[in-house]
Each structure stands twice: as structure tokens, then as C-alpha cells.
Amino acid sequence: MDLMYIRHDANGHYLDAGYLTRYDVAFDITTDLEYLTNEFELTMTLPDCAEDLLWSENGNSTMIFAEGTEFGGLITGSKTNLESNEITYSGWTWRGMLQNYIIEPPAGQAYLTVSGNLADIINSLPMPSYFEAAATTYTTSSYQFNRYVTTYKGITQLLASVDPSLRLSFSFESNADSGTVTINIVEARDLTDLIELSQDYGRIALQITYDSTTPRHLICLGAGELEQREVIHLYADDDWNVSQTPIPNAYPTETYDYSSSTDLLADGIKHFEELIANHEQIEVSIDGLGVQLSDIIAAKDNLTDETATAEITSIIYRCSDRGTHQTESFEYKTKIIKALPDTANTPEEVSVTQTQTSGDEIGSITVGSTTTTLYSKKYPVLPVSIASFSSLPQTVTDSKITADMVCVKTELGTPSAQTGDWTVTTSAGSLTISGSISGSTTATLYLAREEN
Image (cartoon, rainbow, N blue to C red):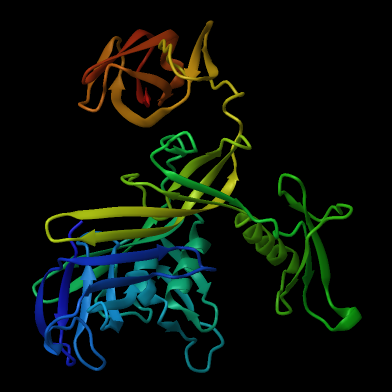
């Protein structure tokens, strides 16, 4: 990944731009509002003269970035090591820069209240002049920002109020002497059918942490004083379901003080679920996984046989450039969303069959009177879409299809169009569906190949 820079002088005048070489860099980007970092460090050899510094107090300033990606930001400080003849620049990523702006209520008003298109609202908030929200169709009505909240947190909360699946993504595109940071409103991508992380894959470093301090009993303290204060007790059962049903000897116990709450039960449940979400954390180091912040993946702990969905909440990207070559690594942290059913013991009905006779058996699928065995380590899953068709057989060509792939699931636009059992066969670069059809339908087939 090429790292570029654009440098300006103390008055904001363009100095130069180009590619950086011979450096070590680490970008830490996150969506977790409780553990925000969104910083970076860049270490290079000390230049021969001060004019060549990328940053100096009240002097040069520099943006660094990998074009078209989220990895970039503004240098805001430096640390010099004369012994090693190195300088380490530090700064805020694009997300981090929005953490340094505050949304204030208008003069004479308690809150800032907004209505309209989300892009227009975001563009009206405090942020650098070269930030711009991309066009969107999402809107809101009479949304009220919290008082003196950061721009980043305010936008994140605004999106969540419109649709809990909405997320922010950032990208930077350079021009002659500057550039634009585009803020995109996107839906979280659900990749649980495509990616399952577990200890099976020796090429990754997977760490699963269970926090023993997560409370089972939460005492919520609301408005009022002393014996007049509102108190609500919440409990989490063995599956971490929250209710007001008392659980004897629930431990650990924790208090939640929210005296300004107007709905203590709802606020208490929300807070409890946030604590529970951090109970189980997954950290993984792997190259080339191809996921982004907010993507939702599946993860399995082989030791406890627990399977869960997890959202990518942090990515640490590291790169060492030595002029002639680079080494890169990605570290991902997640937040558990919810437990998934045990697919190893739950047969799944699908509408295609194909024989597969290797790997570790994990279950089966039944189509009509035919049962097909499923095997583990089908990764990655390749979705193949077929436009409307009304006759069989149908052949689809795709260079990604290989002869050792098996179809593990299909989704039909008109399920009633299927008559009897269908069979899917694969070859290098194509697949063929055979069987009987009544009417017309569209289809998406999910292919998988056993991983060696």
C-alpha cells in the first residue's frame, strides 16, 4: 500500500507532495465510542535540515494517506530520538480529527435540533473545510444532538437513531495541492456467510477473551434523593439475556448512576447490553482478510464450541517500507453482537444438492428426499447471481468458480418455480443447474471450496 503526503507551510500554502519511503507506520482506527483511539504514528530517519520536516510547531503541516482508503490523517506532533537518529510523527486519523470538534447548542437554546437530509446535516456540523459528506437518501426529523458532544460521536449517534445498521466510512482523494475527505454513510456488511474465524486456521493469530468482571446484576440509580431515588435492578442469565427477573446470588454486581434519565429502565438495559457486548472479545491478526470497519463476521471458539457474530470495531494497520519492499500486517478487534445457532447440529434446508466426500463432517442438508452431507472448512463462500430464467439447465460462467467447489445454499426469487430436486455441478470457470422448473425465477447460489 503506497503512502503519500501533501505538505503545507505555516500559512497553509502548498509546499510539495509525493510518496513516502523508508518508514514504519501504524494506523489505529476504531468505531468503538467507549475506546476511541483513531491515531497514527509514522517513524522515519531525521532529515538533514528543519525545512524538510513533515511537521514543526507553528510551522510545516502534513497530511499522509493511502489514496482511496481510510488509512490517513493529519500530523499534529513529533518526538525526536537523537540516539537512533529517528523522528516519530503522531497525528489523528480522519475519524480522529472529528473527535476534536464540538457540536454546541445554538445561543439561547438547550440543544441543537436538526431535520432533513443526513448529508446536508453532517456538512453543517463543525469539521475541517476539506471534509464533505457524500450524497445520501437518508433523512431525519427533529433529531436532538446531546449537548457539547464531539462531531464524530454526534454523527455516529445521529446515524444510529435513523437506522442501527448505518455506519460511517472515510476515504481521501488528493488533487493538485490538497484533497478531500469523503464521509460516506453505509450499511454494515453482513459477511457471516462468507467468513468464520476460528483456531482451525493456523495462518492467523486468534485471541478470544472472556471478561470475568462483566456484571450479572446491575443496580440502576435514577432521579431523586436518598429513599426517594428511583432504583431498578437488572439481571443477566447464563445466556446473558437481560431482564428484571431476580437471580439469586447474581455476581458480580455493579451500579449504574444516571440521575438525569427520563426512562431509567430503557437506559439501564441499553447500558447493561453495552457491558455485555464487551464480555467476549475477539482479536485476530491476519493478512489479506479483506474486511472493513463495521463488517459483521462469524467467529467460533473451538475450545468452548461457541459460535457468535462479531462486528469489526478496530483495525490496526502496520507497514514497514524499506525502499525496495514493504511488509504489512492487519490486526482486527471485534465486538460480539449475538450468539448464533449451532449450525453443526442444525440441518439447513436449501434447494440444491451436490456430493462432497472430504473434510470433517459437521451436519447435513435435506432437499426433498435427498440428504447431502456438509463438511467443514468451506471458505471462502462465493455468491453467484443468475438473472431471471424459466428453463433448465442453466449454465453460468465465472472465472472464480473451480471444479472442487460445492454449492451449499441457494436463494430463489420465486421459490415455487422449483419442481423437484435440482442439481448443481461445477467445473473450471462455470456451474450448471439441472432439474425441472415451473415459471421463472432469479437465483443466488453460494459456492464453497474445502480449504487445505
